[in-house]
Length: 562
Image (cartoon, rainbow, N blue to C red; front, side, top):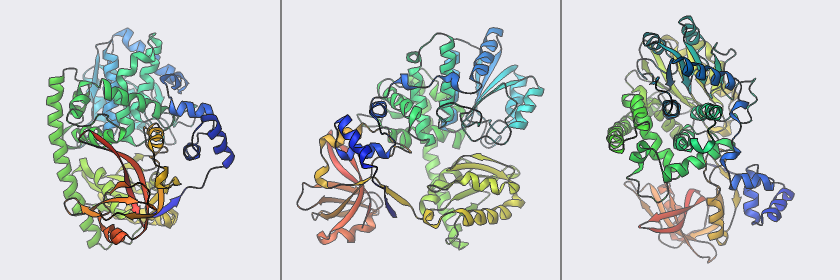
């Protein structure tokens, strides 16, 4: 691990916040590091409201999208809501379809089959729309690069509205409206929305047009928060507002499908972390193992008994997904070792037998293990399909663009992408990708970095600090849980390895005779010798509240020790 302590922000900015907010210097410093430098910015950060959301009509083509939907409703046309099979896509389809169905009956949903149709808009879906007399398709979380598919639909007199958040190519599809805040000609004030977030802006615009207020739309925010958490978009601006109020819905009055997924979670409060590790993988498992339709059925079900039945089926898919994930990760690691590719700056692996539904997770696992830009390929029809994952601060999408001559198609963003290629081009692509990344990646990026916010002493940790840090939530990219370093710690003699293979570390630490804190280090079992016999060490950690049998205690969640 590289320990990288963030530079201290400008003292005058910190001083200003200390006096304006009446907070400790540490809190002011953490805020300035997050770009919060004024009283108004701090108020918006600590007390966000739904009034902070931008006018949806600021998004390019929003007026065209709303006009076309209202025309369709006026003419009694059939509307098809199409979306990708992952969490972002299925939540977006659930949101837009359930909103429209609340006042208009001629609405149906379509999720492509991961194996038969692949990612994005498919010709099969357009043929389905033509056969069933759908004249308008609203595509969510995909479509920004579907030039040929939209042309095919236009020839059949089927209109498209695209709601996407991926980077556009050089051309935009000839759709009625293309909603994507990443369009170069779109001046929408916030361009980091997820696909479901763009879908929500469309719903918000439709609602305004129908004299509804934001209060009428809060029931949909559990879906938006789930998508924001799962898609790992920045937890800033509108995303943070939507996630915060979505979490409130999840904790107070979630839709039956989400309620069924979390009813066995023994926690008073569901956090964004719980959404990432409990809700999202289960919704994803439907599209990975069976079909994304099952996730939409769960998320749009209003009867709790039926939702519980769907949730128990999805629980089984998730269990199957875990088994496959474990097996394929093991096979991929073996392949890297056998091919003696540990020294490469990239990881590219392929087996025709790997399950297409879990290659994205496997790519993430390999990135965790070898910490390289990683691509995992499997056979998909007569082509190879792949999922790519990157390391911090390296743009894998740009690297793929340079290798585009070897690819049939690709799409995604800085840290995650998908692609297909012809089998005969696999080796040439693999060599080109290694060459491109070798030439462009800074060697430091191949070692995982721990970004440290501030150095503190154990005596700085008190109830007031924890209470204010809790108000920094929800956490996510660009608003991560604060990470601290404390030097000269000693274990009080309780240090031990825990877990099945004793690969986790549990200790009780003090600093210069201060009050002690329990500490847990997941995956740090190999550091036990470092802290034995009360030898002094430095630690990097987050401050956690641990809930056990109704008791809440402060503990340090260790990230690394030296």
